[in-house]
Length: 445
Image (cartoon, rainbow, N blue to C red; front, side, top):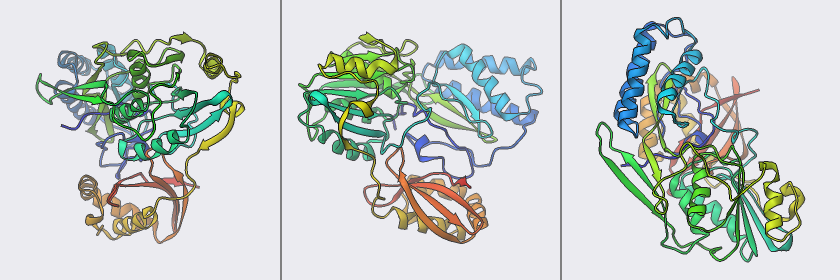
């Protein structure tokens, strides 16, 4: 069974093509049609039926899922949703109604016509990052600093994190900033923790429900060997109220292991990894399929958040950590930095431009080279080929591609100029050079 992932708090586009890379900590299920501007009574009934089924069959707490499903069905029968023809208004009401029962910050329903607001402030004005890593710096007094704003799948995260943390080897103290971290892969969380403890330490368990049953599986994550180690280095972790999901797991794991000092604000309080469910009519839901269980505390941070060891406003957390580390305090990393030793790359990864060119040509012709795609992505492409062909053939000739930078998952973003419009797309290759994921073709001026 593939384990669900902690939410990455980023916008998800629901369209007739794959969702944005940055929105996909694991494979998502996106609606196969563009968002309608209005929905009728039959549409609403179909969405409620699929949502009720998903809650009963998949939600990590079966009894709670059943109660939430019954609540929206009763509301529908009583006419509570009559007249909600606007998809955004309807899905917002559904989210409120299931939330009133489940009290789960990861549980959301939304329409492509009105994407959901993030459950935290973590996604506001996110900086450029490569595989979730914004920067690494050497500060005064031998202090190292790294900011991690997401935990993408380990295939891309490991490569970038190895480079960033290796550049901080020998630091007298280390600051890990997750104030803007919205979550991601539990495996990648465990890999970051691995740099900070000895190999073989239990880090976190994910307990996942087996669909349509009351049975559960358990996947355990342990620390592994890393290129450099900070296991004996004093550690400070910066948090905010916008730290959410997998970002919280990192802080919680460090605290449970007694490994470092958490400085900042109480975090958002979301500990249930999610899967995406297509409800039809360009409506989708994030359904928590599992729960985190720390092997030390035997519980998690759901609904409570991680409680800092030193509680200060988020904008003062860096200064407080520097003071604790015996260095000169500063509120902003730009002022504290002596030398930035890692930044997101400015050149494309080998093969991404050619791969994306070939894929776009295949979309437009209706004959993509499926051998150049991973099996999962090939299946997704086959299912949506008709819509993809219509969309890309209408764009006309591809006249230029310009590398824009790495994206949140470590892929490459390009600005594409077609005869009939400009788009932005990102592409991520697997280690064998096959296309693992691409983003939606987002319009540009």
